Length: 531
Image (cartoon, rainbow, N blue to C red):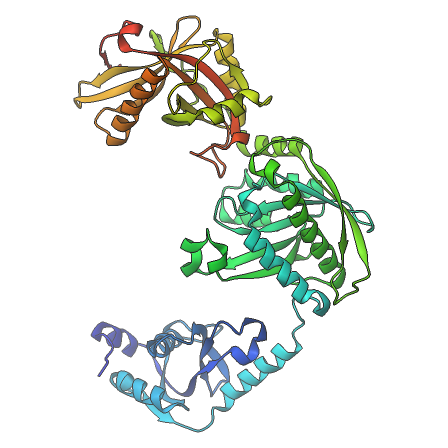
């Protein structure tokens, strides 16, 4: 027979025992929530029948075991909700024989009698009120738009626009037949944290939110900023068990939900008739735009795109009515939002009086040593938005160009490019041996040699790190294949979804250089000195 821990019994016996009779029950909630029939949930409730007050009410899965009954009962005793005071009842009544048998043995040491009754008047009243409330509750979506919107949401989930659009790539939706300002649509999901679409009702609201969200420190600050948005939204709720399978949408069950956020009315989880029409037409236009320009979006070609569509309203509304919609992207706005996201207070860097300087590469950069395929190198060379320095004229040999990648924020990337150009460009990249006498640790010191002959440290890598050892071996092999040539790539996106894996749209500069040896630099083993 199951028993409570002796320490728990001792603690509960210290509570005052009242003469009150408590009612307890577990009932299915499916009859109250017709929109959530796929999820079987139960409500466990404990009430003080003498005071007709609810002490605890908890929603649980229908698969949850009987232990939930005792868990909630202990909460009802020690930490009741509302104005109830901690106490033990003398008598408990339930209408389920199984619950009675389960509780009777557990509660005997607490001097509580458990009895079986046919009816529970107070709990019956609570659930009757719940039933009436559920019947009076308005639908979350207008009946004429409910199925069309849910179908559209499912199509969007399966097409996964977040694979092509980052949240900074804003799409403008202009409903030409409606007396509305343009909507500014942002797609969430590239980071894999939250999936959905925001339709901002003004450009000012979008910019204010992006600016203020970077300044919020506490959860209270972020919540206040969140509630200042002015937008409609489509969000997807993904079950925890489906998160690992998210890459294949056909195997993932999601629940879409629509609503509105406004500074004056807060978060509203439903749409009115006119709102539903605007959201439906906008989402339909977005899908057509992505389909028509999939190549440009997938290859991250930041060029102005504009298309006009005629979107019919659903048959459930009026199949003969059509709305003209103009859809466009906003490369300049994207750059502006990226600057808002990445701009930070610049930290003062102390210059070191040393033949090797450390004040060129931003300290918080993401660094990697690898290879870039020749076709990607060609794309960068042909991209007018990428700064390309082809001073050494590399011939394409081997599988690709060995490169050092420095990924930072856009403002710091621009500053780094300008500084390298001011120093005469990039002459070479090398790795020199360094050691720390105190810890007897050996390092590979990554060096950039600029056109004026100065050396700048870009990274310190432990020589016994297996990942670095493999990267260095590949670097040497590829450098031999390219006859001693390599490259430096500078990319933005340090804080975005592409951190560590920059896409073509993140590339800012390609500097060709020579792969120099330690002997080429004329340096011996460098030692870390303590000052």
